[in-house]
Image 1 (tube, one colour):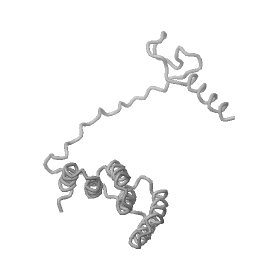
Image 2 (cartoon, one colour):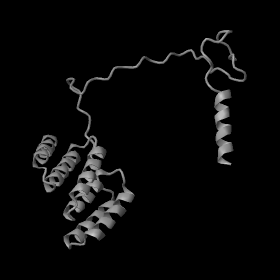
Image 3 (cartoon, one colour):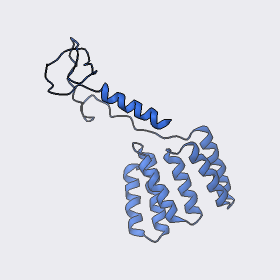
Image 4 (cartoon, one colour):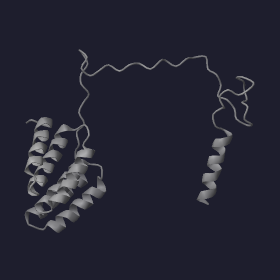
Length: 178
């Protein structure tokens, strides 16, 4: 049934698609393709695209930085997981954080929390992967990016890669010097 609906929809695209360029007969109410109707010509012209002003121009404020926050459900689960982690129950903490992740899969703060739990559970390679995912998702929020770089540094240091850890710490400090 789904195949028939898709085929019907796609066949409609072929019949009512845009007119062919360079067809004989010039502009008119009907194009050279059978059944295809050209859109009506309007009397107004669209404005040419404007150039954007660079953010460093005088009098123009810089664009607002993006800030990630945990929603109430995910924040509650992260808090519960932190308590479970403090009591040494890393497996249960990971399960709780995975529930938070199912609620907010694109929130880098959840990935950072899960990475910290992995690091506490002595799994630095997994923590590194979680931190990289958080860094990918944290685009536009330098504070969260700095936290992700800090977790990367800690996971690298736990793996004995001290030079790479120092470089990651420097990136974190550049992003969020506080």
